[in-house]
Image (cartoon, rainbow, N blue to C red; front, side, top):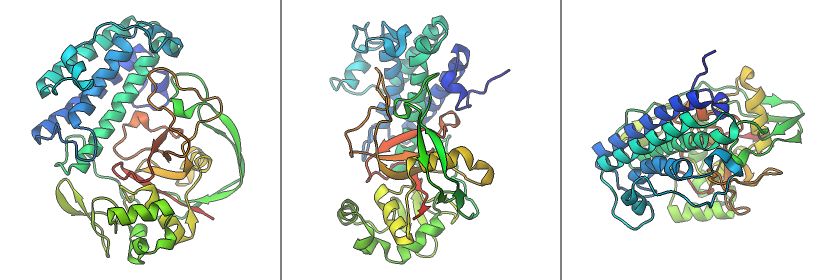
Amino acid sequence: MKVDADDALAIRHADADLLSLALIDARNHTLAWLAHFESQQALLRSEGGLPPLWLAGHAGAYQDRWIARNLQRQRGEAGDGGTARGPAADSLVQAWFDGLAEPPSADELRRYLAQTLETTLDLLAAAGPGDAPLHYFRQALLHEDRLSEALAERAADLQLPAGPLWRAPPARPAREPLWMPAQRLQLGSPAGGTVPDNERWAHEVALPEFEIDAQAVSWARYVEFAEDGGYDRQELWSEAGWAWVQTEGRRAPRHVEQMRGSVLVQRHGQTQRVAAGQAALHVSRHEAEAWCRWAGRRLPTEPEWEAAAAAGASRGFAWGDAFEWVAGSARAWPGQRSGPGSLDLMPPPGARAVLRGASWITRQRCRHPKARRFAPAARDTMFSGFRSCAI
């Protein structure tokens, strides 16, 4: 049976043949973004984030470090992450990553990306079966898919024209919230395949019944908060959130020019009217919490969000339009341990907030209902939104 390279579950258990197809596909996305930033003369722009050239190049750098130069790659996470390594694929590009040289040209970086992918595919063809020998190849794919997403975020933040991989966010008709019964949930992912560090490991939790929005809060619902003076009412905000509003001078989410009546945003360097049914985007966790206080609701917990995503699809629970802020701060699940080459190192307690789901720009194979992301509560450069629960 043919397995789809966009299947989020299958890709975590992918064999060498499926990984080869997916890695080539991911590199083509990276190169498409590289060409787009190059056409806009924006490869080295770094306002508010890492330069696009660095993001694109890091796809090759991860493969070079953790596959080509990792002498214990066949052992997977059981190997010594600090073991001696062979020479870098390109000493000048590596010196740039180390902060010791000027950045390469776009053509030089393309050659580097071609070289690292060729080496990765050759080593993949020779890798043995099983989770350990394929671990770093699967990790490299996840890393590159996330970099592609980060490049889309940078394009949006730099107000570049729409790129070749851009799609319009979906607009959804309003739906009534869902009532979810009390249940016991296996929160997190079980062992098997390659599991991102921050999903380890599955453990049972008890959930009382709860009501949750069927979809992310739309612009139509968010406008009501702004029109009711939400950004001027200190009682709706946490102490940190109110300080952020005052420091940033915010009266709307990032890129929004008008919130009265209809919503006008700066997108692709142009003022555009967004559909009222689209999920509100570029919302910080501070704003999500303030909206919930204004509405007399609250953010869902991680178990509530995961339970609804797992069992609510047939009842209209829709996710994947925006990464969604949830209650609480980033923490490790019981038994979690970060392995060498981890993409999800655990932050200090209380240092990061949690988002669940995926955004409309996330690659299909990364849209897993147990996926977690961590970010500061003030971050609004991501394609982030939220949904709410009844108190």
